[in-house]
Length: 315
Ligand code: AMP
Ligand code: MN
Ligand code: MN
Image (cartoon, rainbow, N blue to C red):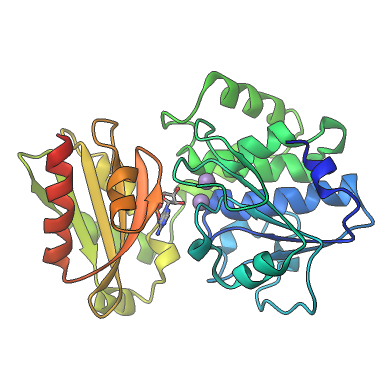
């Protein structure tokens, strides 16, 4: 896809990522926003986001200009969905997406069926930010754009650690760091640093975790009561599933938090032996081979039973 050609002579462009935005989602939407400011300064661009975008990303250019209320009259000439693999994950942006004259989707989820009129889905890319780098014309990448792209890659690759990092991903990171932002500070302050209560709730989740299937699986859960007690939101629980996954011998880690009565958000991580995207997709979710998510109804035990049944089939 030639992104600028596809955007063509659009006068207004809407941009959105997925609900409960993560680092790649916030960074890719703001990267495109900053890029279009350089490449097409005459375009009126609106970035939508919902569910309290994490404030750790407030250093990114455009963060304060994001539209949180979905207030926009009329329709967009072009609407771009980034890091979104299914319509329901567009949240409140879906109506703008449906009304737009033309839609574009850039993503890296294998489970993405191609949501838009024009799609660039690269399942082997580390992140949507990596795909955007490939689509951007280098003359319009400035420090702000580079900082966004770097942040997205850092977050979706667990600081360059996961198997989604290819030689090409490292080359791109190498080119990005030339723009002169403070990469180590971004990694420390947005990926590793947690608030005191976040660490406390992580501790609780680890303490109450259960090993099963001969130690090959681990599961833990945070209920509404615990979230209220520590006064944390879902976005503060990011990273817990990865810590569970770091347990020696574990092949699949499952972390869930209670969204409502008998409704849980489930995160799964795998070391590659089990394809967790396949399992998440069975229950209406999606993601990648080694990192996937889904929302499920039932009790904690119903959900563990259903998931472990599917995990067992693949082991
Ligand atoms: P999470 O467990 O929420 O960190 O998500 C892991 C991966 O799965 C990310 O790439 C998400 O975009 C994707 N994912 C999470 N939840 C869903 C869902 N309900 N539907 C589709 N993909 C999801
Ligand atoms: Mn994402
Ligand atoms: Mn992503």
